[in-house]
Image 1: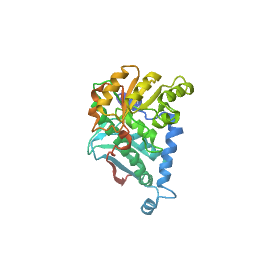
Image 2: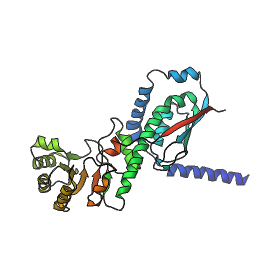
Image 3: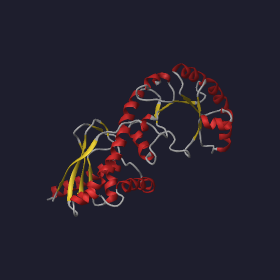
Image 4: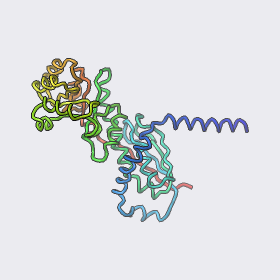
Length: 309
């Protein structure tokens, strides 16, 4: 009897440790203010009045269970969002996660089991999978891209080229995959692009005006497209210079001229396939919109739904 109590206590402590160790995707404030409303909006998009198909074949509450199965090797990401879809519909649904965000997964692995009212499982399935597949695809693509920069000082960055209303999920996925986030939105930092420079009249004017207006804690980053703009950005005191859509020869000339007087970012149509052109240039950052706008989904599926006692 004493041994049984000791084992029970050990199991409780083990469970508590697992909860502590599990990666928490969003803090409570972010979840309540930013994440839940987006998930609810996605659920409402899929169910405008009722789930006609499910209500046709399941007339009342019937407890069931289904398996979340991996159908493609990759990096899993978005498991808490997958779970949240179901629990927002019905807080009595149980989702037993077998993996954590950032884990490598392989074809055939069971990633989670979902147990509860079969009507809820059927109604939430597609929305939950849409989030999980998209987020895991971004994490997988980012992981493959970031691995090409291993051993260098260069950080891989995402961009604002995200799916509207999904930025919080997509930028999180980049981090899970081993990348880094650029500014989150327009309020997050100063980035003077070609049209800002056009509106200001010159690189010098744009940087001067930004320094006068923006809070002193903000770094000033400026996008340049040729060597003359590089020189002007350095002389005007830019904190970060983005070398945009330059050829390798132009990049080398610009990097040599900047010579540590500003941080350097390379940008412009950078993908996993052409990243090798920039790896050895020793810049601080390389940004790639492809991480979020071109990553294919990771194939996962919810299968084997059946009633349980």
